[in-house]
Length: 204
Image (cartoon, rainbow, N blue to C red; front, side, top):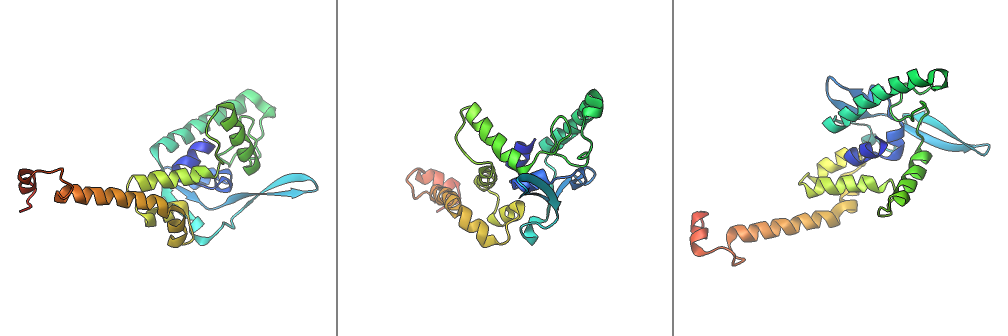
């Protein structure tokens, strides 16, 4: 669930870990980022604190709830109830309001996300990437499917349009190549259309 949320929405790991059930509005079909999990080292131990101080104002965002994610969330609710009943007193109810918990009810922390993602990559022989790279994968897929850069900025919660453009301008240039090929084909200057085909297209 953690990975799929990151892929579909491009959320930062702290944003994923900080998600509470109140971020989900099933009636309006939305998901809202309004807090994050902040991990610091205190006396040699890592402590997690949930804060509302996000990276920038644009990080606070409400997005449509994607059907696949909604289905996974509903299934997570069912599994939480099942594990709570099976484990009884062994189930940790301290984090019931959080979405990303393990089978025993413990909060999945940002550090755990990083470590376990690295473990999964190695275990299954996948291309070596960081968890944060899923955020870039999300942006790349959106851009490749014709989503405007401005919309991608809002989806990812970047502070400025320029930030998004600087990160993904090389990908945007690939879409411009497609546009160049399309206009060349449409006008028939590429030699791929005959004269009769051009006339059918309304070109004299």
